Length: 101
Length: 172
Image (cartoon, rainbow over all chains, first blue to last red; front, side, top):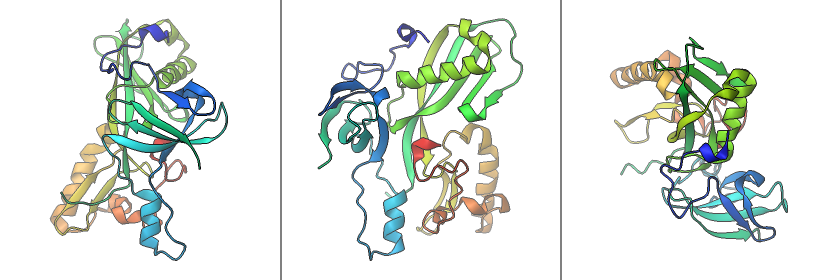
């Protein structure tokens, strides 16, 4: 497909690119195609002695916000580091990107 | 608010319509391995789509690299499609479950029944979904076709997981 033919209808000014552009703290701003998505970064593994309900929630249940979302991205075609991105799920604006501590 | 936490995330699925051409395809053609489908509308446009965008979103648009991937799958299946121009494209928000299968189930709140998480299969399967949901409401027990679609399957380790991709809603 010719990229020029992808319609712009529905795009916001803030997210003017045709795909996400993620500012990697190690490599600079790169296209989404260089990354693999890793999902909700707010979930935390329960204590080792937690019950199975806590582990089921950890594995399967997500808040799925319409708004700001903390999420993991793996820079597979760059520094190969996991990054934590704070992104808005409607505007796709990326507010911050941090490397793993 | 019922405040029931669910194994569901919102992801965008793109669809595309080409310019109109003479009769070319008289079936809905599915390319399962490539997650691609195509049919021809009565007006002659080719209607097709493929995989979801793979990151949580409520924006009804699509990311460009998936659009390119879908177009490439179409050309791999039907090389003649390479000559077509795409007229329009949009993104719809899919209720993607963690195992890629729907949930038809009673919820922890008495009297509350759920029919959702259809991922991108709802348009095709919802007549059966409505019939089996009515059965669940009327009789208080799941229809034999949907006993495996209860919400408890996640906590109890009975996920359906047809493609075997694990608890990642963007992988189905």
